[in-house]
Image (cartoon, rainbow, N blue to C red; front, side, top):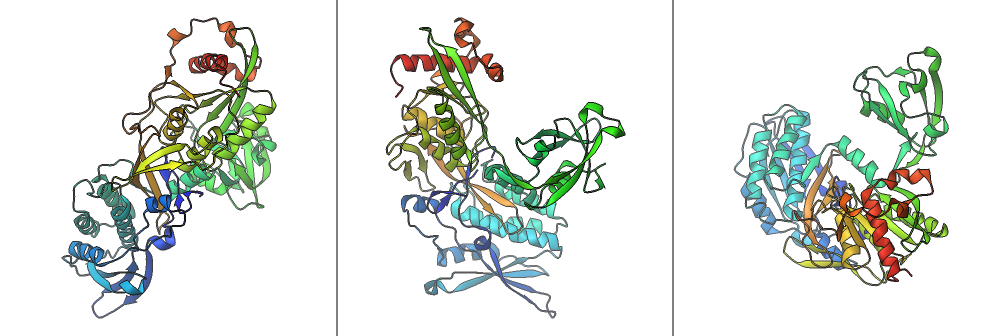
Length: 521
């Protein structure tokens, strides 16, 4: 994950989180285990380092990951836990690495004899500590957060399943009153990472269970992937993987069987969608596993006639999510369209729910020059911290229209706000979703992940976005399209679906206005 600032990672879901560097090994590490048969007490020394303030890192390019620890933390933890007692107990020592703060305080609370619940208890402490030090609201929704740990641990003690224990953690997080602060399972986090990284190791198949038959069918193949090269098509049925029949196998299990280390192979049996039910239509294919790039970018070149009769080319770029590859993919797409004679652009952020905030800022810098402010953040102490470009150089100054709607959220709103408030783009569409909060993402010891709201943000012009959204400069409605359709004729059938898109038509009109004013470079 690339950092927004040198010590700050940004990430994001359906909205856009930041990922900080207090990673799994450092968030909470089991230091030792000692077992005593006489009193059946389990003593565990757990290190709960205080995670760094990413705002400090944002303002100081060389800020280190500070380990902040002291008497105040120890007193607060002790206050919340020392009152607990049970037949089985765990002693947790909270301490610091710093020689100047080498003292520790051991506190006790009941430990479940159910192994899987015991593991989730550790996740609970991990979660509690991260919330305590990073959550945007230092009052924790006006509640005693130390007491909340005590209450949740007691409620978790009699449980017998990990699922029930995780429900207690979710319940604890719900009391914060922030729907974006949440915990997700290891499987969910793996899918999140694949979507954010934009790469996976596999064969390039998207599959799903057909509701009527329960069979696994191909939704699509990634262009250029092993599956696509083998001639597998949308609608084909997946029958076997490595000789194992897939009757009753769910999608997640099948996906895991298809994925694997680059250089290995997987053998699949596919029944063609053109001849389902016939044994002769089943073919066996050996597919090599490769790095599969999931690009969030799709493009088209729109040729249309302007109001003064000139033919012009507009580059249409659809950005579906902010993955780690989004900015690089967009830069490549724009350079390719420039070589084709494109002189104006439509950037479509409609129904883009977000992703990596840093990716959104990187995309903004493709279009902006100088030291412009991209977004303003407000930390838990109420400090306003602008994030600026440093000596930015846009790769094009041609006219730009950005399409937004109610599905454009988080990183999409940051990007739209940056381009709009810096007078680089006209916004066309409908008011955006209105999510002005940023989350950190931390992988926990069991592979689950905690999303924590760590900051609020404002647009460069200090417009509040949270629960408000961004209003477009021009709304796109059918009433606005009374002009002749001849001015929007397209030369290629590949963009015919755009021809009927009212927002694209309005965007083209706005680009004509910009070009007539001489805004193109």
